[in-house]
Every structure is written in structure tokens, then in C-alpha cells.
Amino acid sequence: MGEDVDGSRTPDGGDVLRAVGPASGHRQTPGELAAFKGFAECIDCMLCYAACPQLDVAPDFLGPAVVATARRWDEDSRDAGELDRADVLDTELGAWPCIQIGACTQVCPKGVDPARALRDAQRVATDTWDARERRRTT
Ligand code: SF4
Image 1: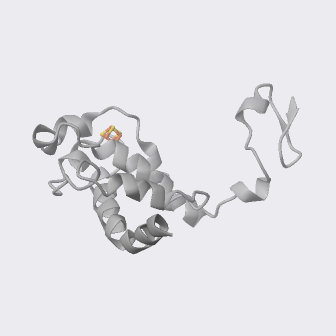
Image 2: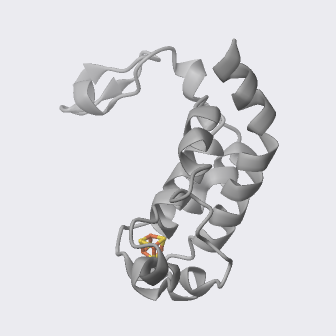
């Protein structure tokens, strides 16, 4: 048994698995968890890639599951990397090849809704453009 950051006891292996840092920094409300939980259900089965016709047009498109994972972290209240990820997603092969056909969401066995992730990533890319430009020039 080891001691966790909040003083509770954990089974052997807890030294590897326990949260790092102050326990209060990792607590979330049910609403905060719900904001990203759907995207966190991805099992990397890649069915969404098989279904996406845009990968025929742009084979190096980041694709549905990658963007869903990026959005999983964007929506996590403990994370502060949205602008960094937006720099990657707001590129020719980032989120923009998606034209919202929705096949990825239809085939996803976990209900991740990667089409929503792509739509949200495109919106965030637009909404954060000014902030990212200011960051680049200061
Ligand atoms: S189909 Fe769903 S579970 Fe499978 S890789 Fe794509 S987003 Fe993840």
C-alpha cells in the first residue's frame, strides 16, 4: 500500500497510478466530467477512418478519432492546451478537410460523435484565431 496525494491508501502500484500534484487540482464536478466524457470513450478501433470519404481526398487528414481526442482535452477543465491544439487543428490537414458528412459518427461503436468534435474544432479554430495571432506576435 502507498499513500495518495490526499492521504488515502492505495494498492501496490499506486505510486505509478496515483494523481500527481495537489488533489484539489484534479477534482471535477459531474458537469465538468460530462463535458468531455463522450470523447474519452474512444477505443481507437479506427472504424471512423474507414468510413470517412475525405481520407480518399486527403489521405494525411488527421481524421475523426484524433480530432475527437484533441477535443476531449480541450473540454477537460484541468487542461490549458486549447490554443496549442488549435494551432495544429487550424491547418490544411487538421480539422478543415471535414465537410460534415457524418459517416464517422454513424459507424462509431462507442457513441463518441467525432463529427461533432470536428465541427467544434473548426469553430474553435475560428473563435481563437485572434488570440493565437496575438500570442504569435507578442
Ligand atoms: S469509430 Fe469511434 S471509437 Fe472507433 S476510433 Fe473512431 S471515434 Fe474512436
